[in-house]
Length: 66
Image (spheres, rainbow, N blue to C red):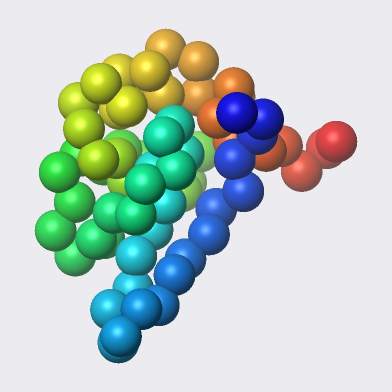
């Protein structure tokens, strides 16, 4: 997966965030896992995705300087 671009989906009145590691939809109101990184909240579907992100976050997010 190349860099991640924060996206928000609104399906049938419910908003979802996208897990930057596996790109699954995550309910931000009740996420299994989340972390704050550089003043942005990131949501994860599993502990594995959260752990992978924490190891190398820049791999999973797009930087504005590119």
